[in-house]
Figure (cartoon, rainbow, N blue to C red):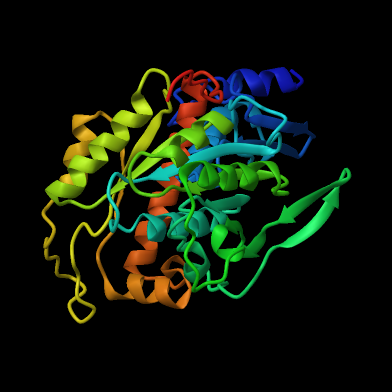
Length: 364
């Protein structure tokens, strides 16, 4: 009997995406089926470039079609295209996912986490942008070693548009690029909110899989401006294990979960989870407490996206503007795992939850 494309699709309906728990065919992940007398070729389009289970998916597909292939060689190409169900708007039509990175408390390493998460996602092949929304204390220019640089300007459809800087594969925008490095930004809340809106409306981001927003600590005008201006796919909450940081992280979770805001919390990142001296890489000292972020994730029934150690190299990398995720080693691996887990949660969220829309708040 002649082997047809329908036969192959029917066999592959038995293969499920391990995260989304739906078959690959109904998810639209099977493309370009080609059948000849000697070969069977098709492409599996993953939901994220950071998918850590790609080999399992490949093996499951091969097992499913082997009984049909006969003597044909089975060639499975693994491709990646970040999926999204985010509500598309005219404001950012080519940005697939907007991810807020927040903390209730300052000093927990939120900007360090955002920087390394952005670079790690770019390392997987995703198109990534990063907005430094901490208008009064921008850190991104230092962490990307571009303090002295300024973005360009390009005329698009008769409008002057800011062209973001690009370092380590990440497109960047920060108030730190527009103000002298030694000057203080002394603005009232509405002015800071206006600057953030400008980063969305007057910046040429082009096509992005992920646009990360490095938010200031707390819950403020900036946070409300964000959710009112663009549809936020989800929020990542950064905390340290200590009690005072966890108390403020709970407030950040509560803010995103308010009914009128209703932004999904993708998970918790426990930063400075333990201290490891460089000369004793196998030792862990829980100087800020143990498993605080893990316990918080369990209490609020959200994933623990990662536990990042407190090591000297992370601080040095931030100060020199070369993110540690580019250097290899245990700390870099922790950030790569964080990127994989975050990308997976975004894909799961997009498959399971209704598209997000900008928030309409009648009162503030």
